[in-house]
Length: 403
Image 1 (spheres, rainbow, N blue to C red):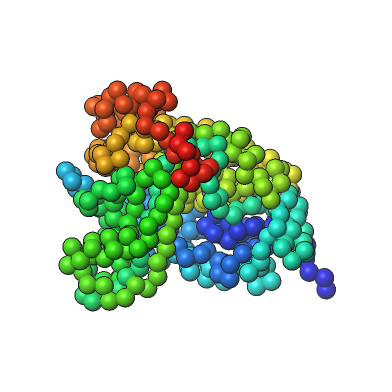
Image 2 (spheres, rainbow, N blue to C red):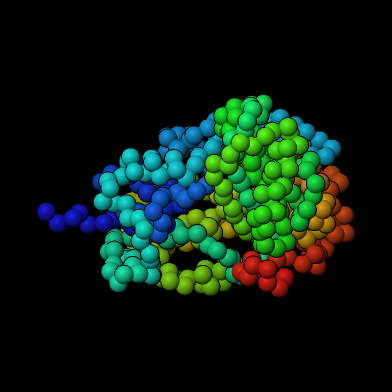
């Protein structure tokens, strides 16, 4: 019997592509979805975390099998302020995403170790000269840079470490900014997975994308030592350099990043770019878009491309307020004072903070965030909004000339 025709081919099995494939398999088993990944493992070597309030009730069942750790709240620490918030917090790992996808999808529909040469609305050209034909294609490969956009960078190095003795944390520290400030706003992110295993990430909101891995490893070791923790082993490590978007031209970006992706092809994930402009946080948007795709009546290459581009354009318009805040963070605040902006933000009401991270701030939320004395000089804030503040990084050229 010849193989069943492919209804949807998803290129890239990271968070965005993996969630689309999982949503289609669970909700649209009548359609054949094939996942194409360059690496041997799906999901990569990542930890993704999210607030329970980020996920709509209708999408809980999609996300639930992926969760490897859950907590009833989290803490933040700043030089002048500390707080515990009661928003439930969850974590997902790349290895768990790999396992769940393989559990739900037929082995023949997962193509790993496959290099892609070009992506079109109805087919994927592979590096070996062959093609994968499909009724529709979504390009969910990550974007290394964002041409036609400016802002800053969120860069990090994280390590899953096993300690000699229990660490004593019962909930995550989502932001510990009591550490010395270097290279912009710096904080430590700590996830206590077991009593003696903790994920420690050294994170920076920086003006450039250079990541000095040996330096950050030393700083993580110093942080652990300062907490009284002795590291017995480093179980794995991950790094990342993510764009923080202050302004840009979406149409120019989409045209500039077409490359081996035909302009009419549907996109997902950071290639779209579907992420929070200020936090670089992509989990809620990845879930929302995957869920939406699985509800479409017409999944064909041309229709899906139009639908994808309309979704991306709507997301871009909805992000205007967050891009304005990014301009203020990078254009008005001195790098070593950026922590003050986040410290003030975390004094606000918990529901407002939840809506902010989910990218669903109300009009009243926006007024409250901007109300009162700003944590940056007023003149600098006005200058940044007028395009005359501190130079912003060119996100299309890491470490290139600022604009």
